[in-house]
Image (cartoon, rainbow, N blue to C red; front, side):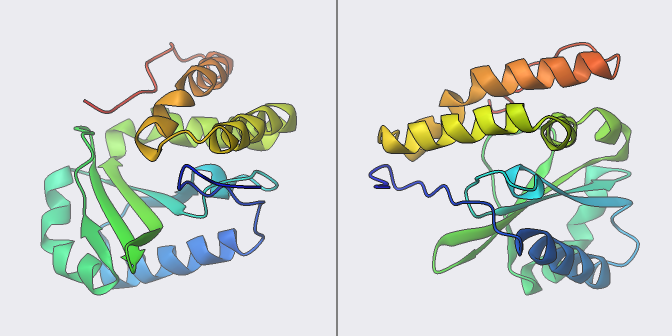
Length: 181
């Protein structure tokens, strides 16, 4: 498969959960007591799902300001602050030679139960037909040469549909999945 867009979507790699677990253990050790919850999210957390080979993690803290003292510890693990326009979280990216390997989303514990990324992950794990639709869309976007700046937005309609369905099953109202300003 050619990838003219510069985005790489890979077949599921069974090492992704181990990579996530190693990062989670390292984060907990580097900032003891900071993260009240810490999970592997995103497509690499869904067995069998094709994904960009970037491990997404989500961590909950009581208050986002509590993460500031951990900046040095996070940087020692390679996680650098990153601003991508999301205002309801702190974002840290780990990259080697400018290639992202991990993304850490730090959110409040109060928002943890209703985070769309966690809800969608669980839905895709339970509904392989929806996971296949999502994988097919990602591959089609790459095959079409969708630029990186457009790729996430191009997935939004399907992600919204699936997340709305998952939230409804949990008794939660729909909310927009597009979070960037």
